Image (tube, rainbow, N blue to C red; front, side):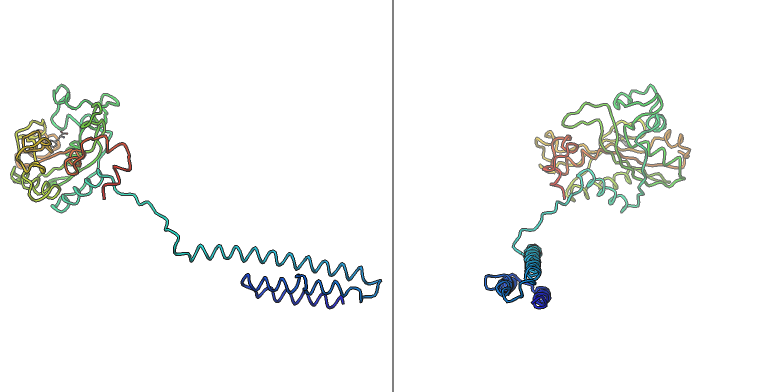
Amino acid sequence: MKKKILKLQEEFNHRIAEIKDNEKLEKLKNEYIGRKGYITQMLKEIVTVPKEDRPEVGQLLNKVKKNIQQIIFEKEKSLAEHQEESKKIFDITIPGKNFKIGNIHPIDLILKQTQEIFLGMGFRFVDGPEIELDYYNFEGLNISKDHPARDDQDSFYITPDVLLRTQTSPMQVRTMEKQPPPVRIISTGKCYRRDSIDSTHAPMFHQIEGLAVDKDITFSDLKGVITEFCQQVFGKDRKVRFRPGYFPFVEPGAEVDVSCGLCKGKGCRSCGYTGWLEIMGAGMVHPNVLEMAGYDSEKLTGFAFGMGVERIAMLKYGINDIRLFFENDLRFLSQFK
Ligand code: PHE
């Protein structure tokens, strides 16, 4: 009888190892521990065992029964888990997970596009510091300590000689100090002015600066480059005009306007009924600036331009409040692809 019990256990172990679905497991369960199963049958057979052996045989049979119950219980659990797993893998009706893909900030979009346009025209990109010396931000740009132009660019000073740059124009001076002519560079980055925040002003904003210096550079080169830039950014149908404008580091200096895209230059609310939108300052590099940087102003000429990136983005995308760029509202930011 003992042998028979042990054999039963062994046989069970083999059979359960091969079982892979619930139905077969249920059958096996019935076969062994069901009401008419082998174990029940054997319990009945105990009466045939000699009395003195009965306790031992009974104990063994009980142990085997518990064992088998336990193994079946575990198998049930593992089959259920397995089923869950395979459901997860194969249920193609479950809706997919929605991955949020970020997109590029509109300011970066303009910066990237601008760089591409100017690189395409033979300009090189240079990067410069946001914490700048007074010399590069003003003096070297022909803006002396008592120059009234400083009033337009109310600044964040760190020491009397160090400030947060108010414009990217210091990169004109830094570049010319560093390299011999010819120069063709653009530089972009953050600038800071003590402006209070409203829909068109922020104390931090971005600029794009350009500088070309060589023999025989003329105002028409400036016009050609700026017109090409504007038409690539705003569209081929846009016109560009130059009005006299004053910046201490250029002579002659100009304010550059692009024709209004809404009214096609006829005049509407968005362009103040002028047909034009102001987009940048520009001009021919002042001889003083060339000389201070160590360039010979008798032999060399150049042009420079500078523009606000937020303004370009606002005009290009029809955005009416500069604060939207800095508020990190995804409903706004996710519109730019
Ligand atoms: N730096 C000037 C500004 O911030 C713009 C400018 C750049 C004008 C280069 C002329 C030439 O207003």
